[in-house]
Length: 225
Length: 225
DNA sequence: ACCTGAACACCGTTCAAGT
DNA sequence: ACCTGAACACCGTTCAAGT
Image (cartoon, rainbow over all chains, first blue to last red; front, top):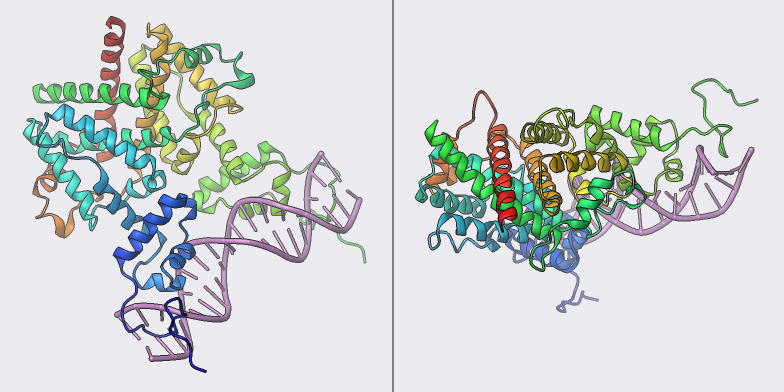
């Protein structure tokens, strides 16, 4: 009896008549998996299953799971809002970019340890974003040697803040240690949450506004040194 | 033939005559493992082996591996330098604390996703550090509602910067995409590394000085609002 | 209460065999 | 070149049995 070739049928071993996988399809499937069930659900097995392929087939297109994460990272970078660069002044553009960047990575915190250490070589979309940023700094009159350190400082703050958003709301409840730490306990109770915002948003706003202003002051200091 | 009871001998099943494990011993063994071979080496199996115990024995003292990480985290917090609080002015004290905090977590980046989301309840040493910080902010005249957001903003920057230190030096080499991204490529080449420092140190210094100054400005704005 | 030892349900990755 | 299927060397965790 011949093997049925129905649409849901099993694919026999051997090279298929037409390619079934590609980096693009793998990236898209990974993103769908992550959006549906978070990073815990992203396993090589589940990824293969969603592509109706054996897990080992993936290794013809990526070298490792880390590789898959790199593909995902360079894809989601494009969802960061860079539309204010070129249309709004430096400060407003940085502000919009930073909030958007934080929001995107709040949903992708497991990528942070990957991206923070990843050479940009070959991560084309990521490089594109840096190019756009650099142009905005130059247009605003920044001295070239300060631009990369400033971008890195902003990014570091953004990555750390993305983790903070995922923290439970009661993260600073001292519990039974409240009496031993009265000043902190009181400060937590009285913290300014801003207009209807969360604690994470208030901290991000304060830090971002401080950093934007402080970096500008550092720029002036550097120029006058 | 009776089982030998030599020092390296096998321990029979059943409750031992005296307790062999404790949270303290587990924490110490985990730290030794991490210092010797990094977090890849910290497995429940390896941990058990270093304590000369079966892996399942650990679960009489901790609920999970995550639990072990929490123990490690609350232990290494004590190695952060808080000695400047109470002896030096706010700005200098924050500066020393921040550099030390970053350096400690540079060697423990896998803890960052844990600590950033961890309720401080029961993390006694962590709470102690926050209490010390809050006291320093109060002594410097900060409005109470701003203290927790300011601490969180500083911590977010520190955590993100700790990742950055672990990045390879050539992280921003554009490779063959250099021509497509000329402004960024040039900015990377000309970046100010400071006095004999690394790129990561330069970015941290710039960001920290900016954040310290910027937060102080935000404080004044808040008071005058 | 606190250990051992066996087992479970996963992981990511490798590799021979097939077309 | 690019798939399948079986196998490998791990993981963290559970649980009955033992004292």
